[in-house]
Length: 75
Picture (cartoon, rainbow, N blue to C red):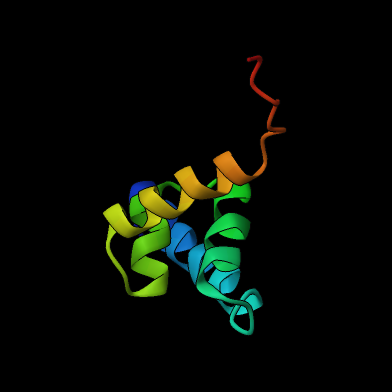
């Protein structure tokens, strides 16, 4: 019988691949947002999308910034 850690590792890979498949028709930034909201780490997202973890981190910063309400500066 397989070791529990091996089984969990395989399940994690299956979940990552399923999550990437669900978002396959979306732009990369949207796929990153969806996978991040599903709880995947930047490295896991990068592996699922075939990009670098740094690319994912930069996209996540942009996504977080675009979600903020921007206030007008006082003069």
